[in-house]
Image (cartoon, rainbow, N blue to C red; front, side, top):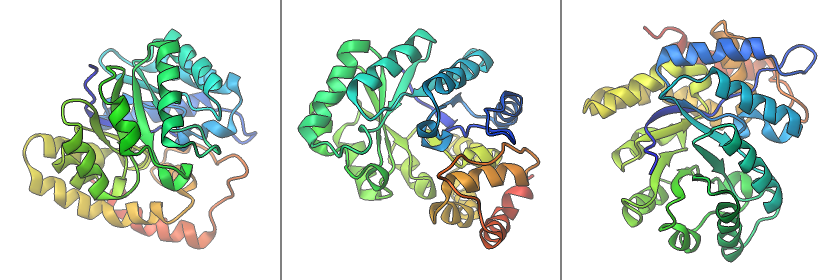
Length: 294
């Protein structure tokens, strides 16, 4: 089984002034995150606005990240689609490009029942043979990948982990204890990542890493070195900014946070709207601790 470890940014997708993918900015962004200590890359997730890109653009992003990755860096592709056949097509393409695994939520908009979730993921595995990190985000998808589905999928060797983004710590504890040694718990609730670490999450697929990579990587390293007090101290310092991120306009704030660090990655595509001056001021104030990080 692929062992998931460290901070893997759920990458934003840089756009230029014309709204096209800005690959020069993308390369600079990856260089900055690598220097901070990330362990891998997760392009074409929700932070990357995958649902606002064409198939050709998604393919270009996956190819670019693959080409700019270095040996030892984990590659996990977001290959979601609103229907199973589309997920299979996207996943086969990621496999062809050499990705180690894919990150998959339930097909969006459909709100499938648990039996349908089981059938969907088994169909993807049967058609692709690809390792999958499940992505449970009921706040966005409208349905949880529940224990019924996880029980049915846990012993499939291609189900290697679950990014748990419910924001409910009891759910993370339940996954950690119920599927120990079978499904890896991946932190996906950024503002309680320290708690996830205590319950066995060795990896963090992290949207905030786009704009606060140094402190989140330091937090992860401190925890894995046994310095839990230092990790908690960092979590406490970052929590205000994490909290503002979770209050709305998440992707817009990630990109504005990059701009604040002198690493502009452009705006977001419609229907995402721009931040107001008040929203910028609130996030800039919360981000000051990151900007001052030494």
